[in-house]
Length: 471
Image (cartoon, rainbow, N blue to C red; front, side):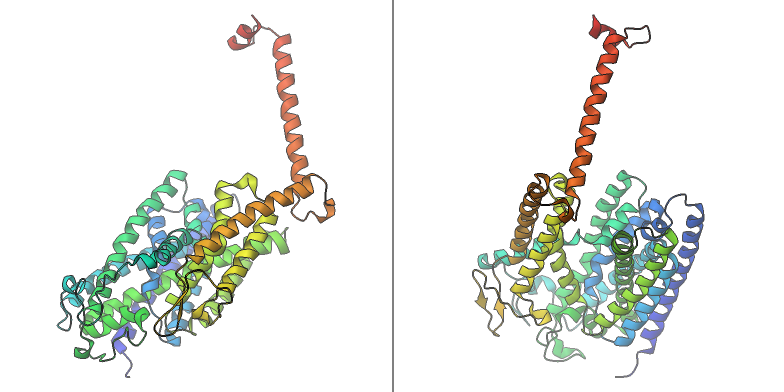
């Protein structure tokens, strides 16, 4: 196939615009670092907690639609990764956030620009007809069978609850100046997510309503060739005029960049602050942490690019990451937010190990991991694949949550009652108990001393409330 020079040129122009925006934002980041009176690393990680609210809204929306894109070429992967790594290294969250604005605007305009041309494709039938009628394939709306309710419930909870476990989301929330701004960012971003989901939905419906034999793609159909994850670029290339498909290519590139930079910065920030600072070098300076962030961005960028080159679509990795977040991390998040006083490090570690073990035992066909643990109501597909009807991801999450609570309680009893020696107490439950007891004693003494003082000193300076209590 000949090289698509116009497409390559459009991608190049888009990348130059994004890179220029990232460089400009990096200068803003440097100015914020000079004005910063707190931790310098916070400027790179959370924008100094003073990110513009509209920028926050756009950048919170970025990663949601990235699953629509496909990366068929190692060259495209390398180019996208190189640009994203470069401007993320230069400016941290400021570069990521302000380039996300450009990417989201470009993505929004490009996809909506392509929709009318795809809907008017001569090879396609009215999508309202194919929604309920079998023509070239089964109706694109599908059917919800009662037997599949467990699978649908599992997928729904995975997308909703698994999505809020990503570090990139909390990085954007923490970058806002106030709680009200953080709340408004989340609500407004959810509306934008819904709007951005409409064009891919329409394009997918048209693709299911198309006689592919009338297109340059031919037969068998993309669905029959197991290329459903590539349907967006395929539709743009074969159902749109060339000048329209160029805009669609820009939308795909925008989705690529928006995902890469967010993942790089969040991963690097987690490693630098939670692992390097808290475990390996507790006395690390802010400059040292910033250096670790930049080195991590580079290393994670190389690892991610290498991983993306192993598949024709990153949709697989996106779904798998959400799977792990839901089955393993969601229970931890629930405990941290809603049950902080009832859990500890021992329970968290046990919940993590149990969740990972159960998820591995269930298996994952996308990674070639065989299932070793049978589940209720398993069935075989027509092509011989094993189908899990039972909502096993939700089950694993609940088992992990129960493990955290039970083990936390058990460990607290062992150490707080002195059944195990203190030198075994890695997470310092005994020390926390002593601190808590001292605080309670100090508070009790303070209250008693204050009460006795008020009773012994009915002076003119005493409050009206104190005088009335003495009377």
